[in-house]
Image (cartoon, rainbow, N blue to C red; front, side, top):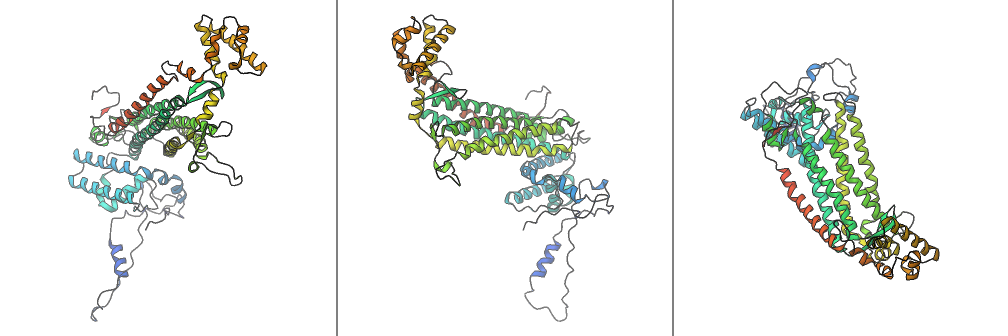
Length: 544
């Protein structure tokens, strides 16, 4: 049964000079005593042998701190509470255990522990991972973070050999290694999630390759585009997000383990062996920088912040489009919510939450940058605060990407309303100006002439398409009768067959490009996860 977390030294204030207890050793005697007391004997005891009960087992002593040799008093209760990060960093246990296993194998390779000791440590770590995976791990009151919790439990499972695991290792380089391993993993996960969103956008774009839509600037109707072209714009934004995350993955791909607290080790450790085992392509070049560097974490959060900005922009457009004022789209009932007061309401809450949570991720970026801005070399406890910002940014971005992919898949577009809006003759005004350019009229003059025609139509209460040939000729004699043929939405789209444009043939190329980008990401991520090249020092100029 999982125990509640009780802070070691409760009621003991700072300055208390009571000595720390001796470290406890693993023992199953209390469990055997409890089992014997709970189970009655199968047969009554012989009369000649009195039934003697074992004395009750003493309570286990508090967990001893790794630095206890320096201090004569236990840590005050409030200090325990204030400095604990277990509630945040416990999710790093897979990376922490994997890093410890690789470190132990390296210690065996260089002869600092025996084969039997390494096997005992590895078996203990595997048992601890099993307990954590299944939710059976019992956290102790004195476990201030996941790293010390695992070490404490390893003493219980493997015995005193656990004390050799921390050889040539500090929590400073251990934590940095764990966070970099986590960063590599979540970058790959985010890249795949974004690729799935791109795929949904491209699929819907294929459905609406010829659906006309007003393009907007300043939230005012501007020119004719297609719904496909609009959706594919977000595919391009998301591709940049993938590329940024790939770069973040590369930033994380530097092993800090072996840097110690700040000045490496006097022991003959082999950092490249550890790097190869953990899939790092590089080892850090400077131990001071390695334990204090969180640039990679900042870049992950920044990539998530910009990703959320892109998701928020799309969410905002769908919020507008699903309003009565636009009427371009509708969410299925399963992806909308209602009002507790107004029975007619159908609200796009999931889209609004994506938009709203963008501020959280932006805030995480500012928080992390502010944490780092005044830190002298090398490690400072301020860096404990890095993980909450990183974890929240990643979690929020991952959830938003998955949610938006669902919405893109099910949203219903009202193509008739879109087409009606796109048929507004004012959207062809630029086409008319460019038509005049082809006939030798300088663009600035053509711009003024069409603007004058717009003013004439508005004064007469008509549209540009309703102006007669005589009306156009009155604006300028060079405007011939062919101008009236320009006011056709489909033709306007087909006139825009330039690379990157909204013409149907160009959109078809963009769809091919989108499919290729998704396929490339899905091929690339497994390769990133299986890096096996010989690790090299950053900046050493050593070929792989």
